[in-house]
Length: 212
Image (cartoon, rainbow, N blue to C red; front, side, top):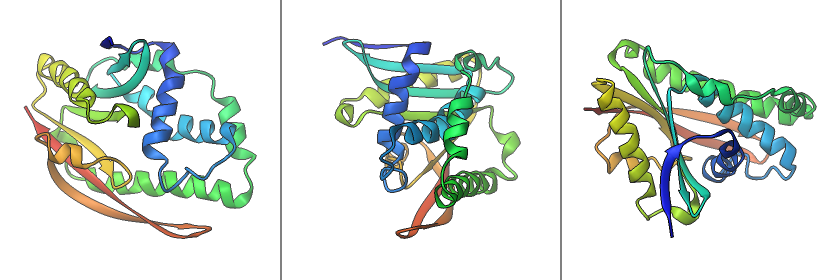
């Protein structure tokens, strides 16, 4: 078996979407059965903003299959992954064509999550030179140190570019315990409550820091 860590290519975006849905849809959009709607939600909520902000990206592949991904950004560096963005008209139309309940749910999740992260970073914006923008490993590859290898690649990049401190947003949907076990310090948390058709859904958002 051949494990490789390499730069991200355009053809990696689709498998990255699959890993993203696997990692972050739990408990919230996992019930979405329409694949086009799920793809649109993942693209607009995760992929587009990540590509727009990132200055560093790597995938882990096992025998050519993408099994993990990490993105980061460094202040004052070129956001080169914007070049991987595509025309998202189709995805926008998928969201606009949702019924009122589904569309409001999408808007609520996006706006409340962004509000929570804005509160968590408030007053700290100038403390950090970098950010871990996105990090996910496929379920079948967890526990095999793939995440640690990807994280070390990002850390090498940050050390090389003279970063002293970074932050990362995460939440209880994600494997936030990974950060507790790998030298990150939890700074604050913010509870977000969503009113889903099937009932109340709570998600706690965190901000962590890492010092080099």
